[in-house]
Amino acid sequence: MNSTLSRWLQAPSVILLLLWMIVPLSMTLYFSTIRYNLLYPERGGFIGLSNYEYFYTDPAFWPALLNTLVLVGSILAISVVLGLAIALLIDRPFKGRGIVRVMLISPFFIMPTVNALIWKNMMMNPIYGLFAVIAQFFGLEPFDWLSKAPLLSIIIIVSWQWTPFAILIFMTSLQSQDQEQKEAATLDGAGFWAQFINLTLPHLARPIAIVIMIQMIFHLSIFAEIFVTTGGGPGTQSTNLAFLIFSQALQGFDIGVASAGGVFAIILANIVAFFLVRVIGKSLTV
Image (cartoon, rainbow, N blue to C red; front, side, top):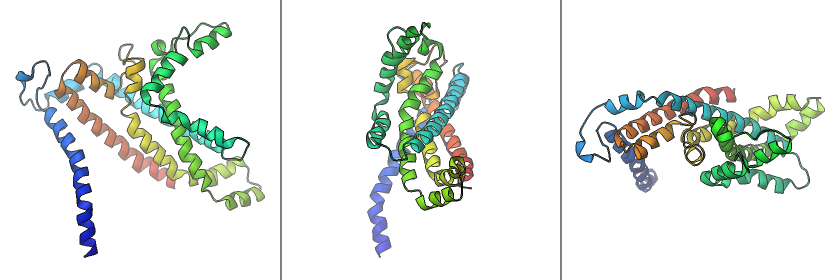
């Protein structure tokens, strides 16, 4: 009786969740199989997989796919490694540790658009940005980051915002580590690296997997930073799949092709998620 009642109580939320996911996905699948351009809505009709073929043969497709994978991989590597290193540094007690923790975590709460504007105007501007001022102070020529290294600039911008998330997760996990084991290892003569490899890293296996999974989901759809800073250029040097879909939908007004790109992005996200769960997750828990 209690089991039946609990299922009935859970039913509304489950149904709402299914509708929340199934309805948009079904509409995306439907639009991906019809000719639907906002400029010529009367020319609609079922065209099968033509939208997918058009999206796949777009000259910007392969650069966008490669940029997406490079962005995700680079940002994950930087945020996890740097986040773990900083979390280990601030794990030990020191004066003002609370203030330092708050300052390190604060960039994560900045909106992506604001974050991009800060880096574009205050840091990477080749005339009055902080990097240009430092270069001029040492007698060097200022470097135009967003024009000459657009993809690297996006990686730096997003990594700066998401590294605090990794710090927060790792810092919380380190506080739950068994201190008696560390003390016993210290008495046995184990150094920092021995303790890190044999005690700390296995303890952080699940937090590392969680950080990778959550960040992967968000980084596959990076858009605001690209839109505000580089606009996907120069050319397609900083265009990823999310920005390419935006270009097709709101700049080309082709909802059908954009929906086909959205379906492809969903498939790619599931493939990457499966790889991370099955391969990285298992290797970390061994």
